Amino acid sequence: MKITLKIWRQRNAKEAGKLETYQLNDVTTDMSFLEMMDILNQHLIKEGKDPVAFDHDCREGICGMCSMVINGKPHGPLKATTTCQLHMRSFKDGETITIEPFRAGAFPVIKDLSVNRGAFDRIIQAGGYISVNTGSAVDANAIPIDKITADLAMDAAECIGCGACVAACKNSSAMLFLSAKVSQFALLPQGQAERSLRVLNMVEQHDAEGFGSCTNTYACEAECPKQISVTNIARLNREYLMATSSAQVVKEKNFSM
Image 1: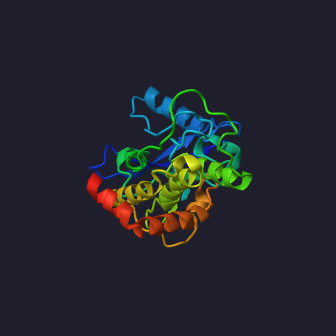
Image 2 (image 1 turned 90 degrees about the horizontal axis):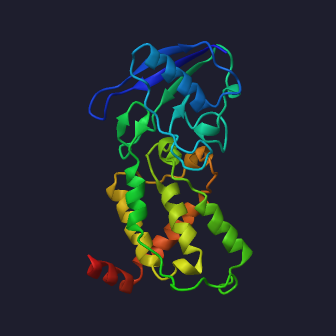
């Protein structure tokens, strides 16, 4: 396959970037998208040029590191697929592919296609911990959880924190990510002790990081590689309203500050 690549090149967050064009003539349909990027970088290095910086790690659709907007879509054209699991057979011979970083004020560009998603880490850290008894392992059936609730919690826990929801949202909102992280603990008995303070702290951190508000366009769900449902955002809103209506929780939060 012959492929034309238009790739966003930017030295750092302060300098202006631009799209640069590259030609590849040795692409096979069996290559993953990141393997194709590796081939490009090998050519650039041989030519004495700076390789394209991009995020990657597990290359198994688990870690959430591969953050690229491909032809205008976070992670590319396939539904429920991360960039690393996208293969070149999804493109046509002679096609032009435009590759850009995830764009959001809270995701500053580090270099080229690599962005800083430390804001997600700080939101999770703001959620704190869960209270559990230490000692020997608890019997598997000691805390019965109904199947529906367990499935909902597991569905929320599938979020890999890639940031596609932010890149897809016209407001650069991280509400889908935030709601998934809140939901996975709010649904389970182990997360009840810190339930109210957790949602208050995480929403506060979300806003402090500069993410926008949700306006229910469902673009986040459509582009999420793990198909996290926007019903989690509805649950987040309920959790937040219940927490703010509790005078005791607000008192504890103000005291902790």
